[in-house]
Length: 112
Length: 116
Picture (spheres, rainbow over the protein chains, first blue to last red):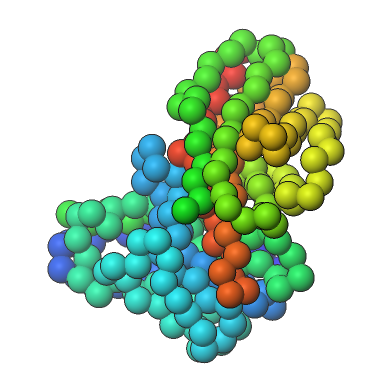
């Protein structure tokens, strides 16, 4: 198993541009989440999904959209990038029978 | 609201010293889970341990040990005989259950530097 994969590893955007951060898992996990990591603030939940077709907002959802059309994929869309969205983004997944989330390698995003 | 506090922002010790990372949490839930994750310089998040609120037994895994005390709402992490490879940022996290979804609330992290 590849586990949780994220692409790209690093991205530079200009203010106002849009992009999609990709996340995929091959463990058939029901639950998937997106977090952002900012210096001195730990990780904060952006959006999460409890299964295909079901998504909900986390602590900091503004400026981001998600969808979950398949169990494997959970893309995060930035509609109009802002410098405040400069961060490291982590995707995570967990099985329904487990309480442990496993994280992808992260995507470092810089918005100029 | 749930909250996790890691009061130690940075810790620096010499190799082979023992070091304890503190974690204090707040929750109104009676059932919850606590976690520690390690983030080495390469940036990934590595799961270390999970503890549920009904199990207050301390756990030891090699040089790592964890002390869970509900009376003080603490879940501290001790590394014995530290090594340079232990240098990383360590995060404590608390799970919040919401309609079947598990949301993790993270502390701010403690940057641990082990000097040779």
